[in-house]
Image (cartoon, rainbow, N blue to C red; front, side, top):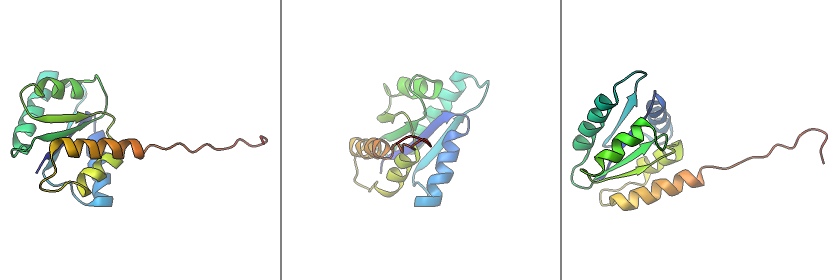
Length: 135
């Protein structure tokens, strides 16, 4: 099974995991790593490396991260040269629910990345509120 790793600035990834588990149950074979204020980027990258090694059982790891270009993203981007991983930025609850509910034993890394990316896009909607006094 493809592993799932959530990484973020601060406790965002832990909050996502907690919220997803309320709706979809636990995400099997997953972990989250929060970048703490003032934490050394090299230390964070090493924690990410260890998690990827633990989560990869031969099918790779899907990494959901908060922001393109930040330390969490940069850490996994460097590690992607050494490990089979797919990275999706802009992690949101829809992606986490997809990872929890739509991942099967034989789902490939590429398939899971596509499923979660699409769920993330589909979960973003805008509701316009008409201002008072306008027609």
